[in-house]
Image (cartoon, rainbow, N blue to C red; front, side, top):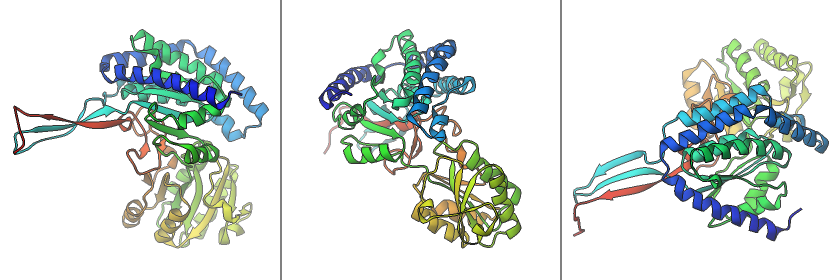
Length: 421
């Protein structure tokens, strides 16, 4: 354990180094940033065996710690997942550079020409649990957007994160960019998290990715602006005019593809007027797939379901568990989601365009879908190459946070000896 004062000193040193690096990054050419990311991807490819060995150490630590299966799944790396991380780095490298992009421009009668252009935020702090891929994703997106980043991964992913971070640093050095542009907090101690949350003047924004414990800590202690990434309490609503085959495919994928990600469906809402045979088949398919269905009302009469408790609605299971309830049409679904949702991702399954438009228009979640699995709530699937997280707040960034969302803007004003009357 390190004392709070020691953690504060550590974060202060890292923050000062990051601020210096951020000055250089803000002016770095697109070519140098692309070269750094490509070199990092090459390093990750070469060091695959070392990264997997480090991940095995983390998996053993996590099992001994008693982590749930869903968290172990988030932590686990294999050749395919490393290939995905490498592909993500190359995809971000190939994207247009957002820094300096002209967002809008106009002329004034006074003779002024005004441009609003994208500019880096500065220093970003990312606090995450379990998922070592965030080390690469966050580092890549911060670099692409001209920001320095301080990463604090979960205690159980320390070795994996360090191995991936070493690849990111190699890429920076090969491109002649400062190694302090992407830093990893080198301790498991949670005092470092508190120090980051209070690092005013050093860190410009914090992005948390984790469960209720981390979110609660951020809400209590943050003195730095936060891009909120709260729970993924995602809903799928099956409307009375849903195509049964589409409903079956989407619901099964939304729940079972990967249960430990924030885009996994946690609650199934079914229109009370949806055909009872299709309703039973849908619940039966979930049960056959090994999902524990915590059902309410008429749905609880279906063999194999478990009676739902009050706190099963509005709960992020991150497991092969789903809460299920009948609702009175699209308005009932909207009311339920407004009450129990976390403003992450919701989906409606229907062939009724009016019902779909009502659902998409009335809900204020960061992502609202029609006839699509909530598992698509991912920056890579949105064409961003990678993401730092899904922002569920309403300020600055919402939904997948990619490179463009990690920029602010400034105004460039040009005149010709122009004075104000």
